Structure formats: structure tokens, C-alpha cells
Image 1 (cartoon, one colour):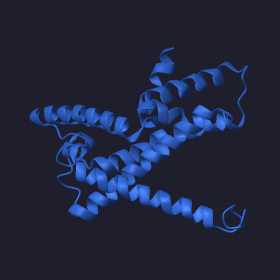
Image 2 (cartoon, rainbow, N blue to C red):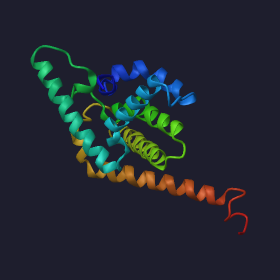
Image 3 (cartoon, rainbow, N blue to C red):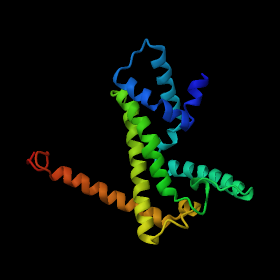
Length: 195
């Protein structure tokens, strides 16, 4: 049980990731080591499940996490210790940190789940939600940089910038409409073949 709980620690997770990737292609349900690794993967996916929620919920959790990070960073600064960039409210660029986290940690976990359970609708839906939230953060970063031209000053206030959020949502809706229209107009689709 201890190993399974430790799997939620990122340093441990990265150590066992090669083994997790290996069991995807050759899972043996009677192998105790494979069973343990699967349990680690499932507990880690539960720990990361906030990233499978809708944008509003995911953003709220991110705000709580960065409040905690920045409080720790402030405490470290007061003790004369230089905090990690993600814990330094003056240096952290939240959209970029979220993109790195989703791309480097969250999405690979849910991709493994989909590979292990290809017929599990919940695994597919979770991966799609993670991918959608990644798209939100990518567009958030793009629009923020276009609007302000810098990463500096991107603090907790971004979670309450309604105008910026409106621009992100509108931009993504427009992009999704274009993709849908392209698919409908592409050769072989029902609408282009006259069906």
C-alpha cells in the first residue's frame, strides 16, 4: 500500500513510468508486480483527476494550488531561500506551468489508461477532458502574451480576469466551429457527398 500511495509523488511517478509503459503492451493480470503498477497508475490518475473536470473546476483547483505554492514561496523568501520558479509569485507564468504539467504528467497518465482500457468510455472521456483543458491553457497563454507582451505580472489575478477568459472561450469556440465545418465539408463526408 505504501508504494501505491508513494506513486502520487512525482519523483516516484517518473521513476516507475518506464515500467508503466511496459505493462501497457504486455499486461499480465496474474503478475503481482503488474497488479501493483496498475494500482499505482490508478491512484495517480485519481490524484490528478481535477484535470479531467470542466474548465471552470480545473481552473478553480489550479488557483488553490498556486495560492499554496506562492504562500510557500513567500515563506521561503522570508527565510532567505530562493523558491522554485513555480512557487515564486513574481516569476511564475501560470499558463506555461499548467501546460508543462498537463503535457509532462497528466496527459501521459491518462494516455496509459486509455491504452490499458481501450473500451472504457470513462478513460476516453477523461483523456479528452485533459486534452480540452490543455487547449484552454495553450490559448490562454497565447492570448495573454499577445495582449500583455510579457510573462511578468501573470499572477493569481489571471484566474479572475473575465475579459481574458471570454477571449479564450470565444477563440476556442471559433476554432472548434471551423474544425467542425471543415470535417463536414471535407471529401467523403455526408454533407459533401449529397447524402
